[in-house]
Amino acid sequence: MRIPAAMLFLAAGVLLPVLAETPTSAEIRAKAREAYEAQRWTEALAAYQQLLWESTDADDRTEATGRMREIDRRLHASPAPVPVPAPPPQPPAPEVSPEPPAGSMPETEAIEPIPPPPPEPPAPVTGSWVDPESSVSVLLADLASGVSRDRVLARQALMKRDPAAVLEALRTADQGRLPATARAEFSWLHGVLGNASAEAVLTGRLEDPNPRVREEASRALGRIKAVGAAPKLKDLLKDGEIPVQEAAAIALGRLGDAAAAGFLCAILDDMRQPVTLRAACAESLGLLEPSRGRASLVGTLRKDPGASVRRAALEALRRMTGLDRCYDPDASQSAREAATLSWEEWLAEQGAGGQ
Image (cartoon, rainbow, N blue to C red; front, top):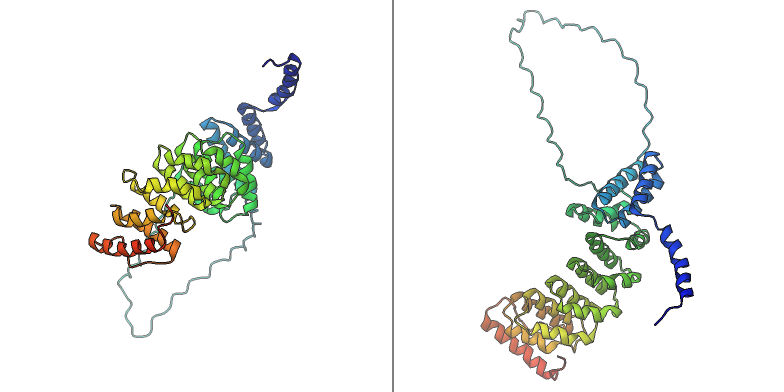
């Protein structure tokens, strides 16, 4: 298909000004440094935040994170207290030696001085730069850092902030070229906050080259009930990374996608699949409607060699039925088989419905 030259010129006339207006990382860095040196703290904070999410250079991100922490402390520092003049020193009172009572002998032995108390041990050094009182933008920078302790502390601090302010800052950050750690942590944050408006961003991250990003995006999509993501989550059941498969399985259960029951049962019944993945599929089946997957779950009680898988299957059946039937997933094989007979009788009474 040939595109008329006039349309090409029109497109160029529209796109070129837009591209020309997009600042480069070097320009953003220079703007941030100039504002910082001039002590225009609010302007410098905004510029360094833009540098953090736009630059792909590790040195730029390190500089931006450090400067944002410093500027934030400056902006939120308490004013210095007004010094109170000290009272003038009083002349020391003359020492009066008490006279010994009549007939007493003066003491000749010196009294040993009391030893000073041992010094207080130094406070433990945590190695973290996270200030829980920092602004939301700074805490997001801490969340995107490569230090695991910083991420944990930033998570805790962000959970205490106004969700609307956090989501607004997330929307701005998601538009940048984020590193893998930030993409994973921000996906987690979208899910915890129940941000349904992030479905498109999270669905796109299901194809991310980083497995942890795919894992966190899958979990978040399950939490926000993003039914539209179900087809791609089913594809992730075949992902090459086990944690991604597990997250996708749990997400499908949270979505209540009955069409996924067949995929989950196929994995649960395959003893070649990893134990943790089979357990995740059993847990997910327990989140679907009661008629789905119960035959596979009862079969798991009898034949699966993994205690954790049997335990997950039992919990799923309890959720479906409210029954227990005295089955102990950690009991001996003979005891488990006897209890499984009770579950199989129940299944026959139900007509063996479901998968």
